[in-house]
Length: 131
Image (cartoon, one colour):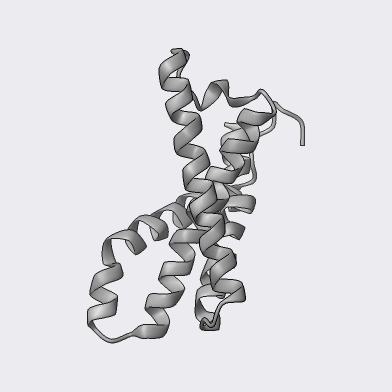
């Protein structure tokens, strides 16, 4: 795919619906838990964390490679604040995923985290790079 081509329709749909599911997951997490749907709550938690970790990891990697101008402010103070924020999000998310994988956890969380990272890799990132 060259730089002047648009992302396929299914990637745009994955970006839009995956992001909507992420926003919905953020707002309904406590309601799901209060209803007693523990497996759905764990899938939701994994999806939110996997989505956030994959996206912040992508932005952090783009910044390290020198392509972060489209994500960061040009002012030096705000640029460093952005670097620190992205680093903190990525480290906490990554450590949370590692703790869930190697800790005593339910498999529902890992399924949600994998799906969140897949939405970022196959939907959101191609749309960001091609639109």
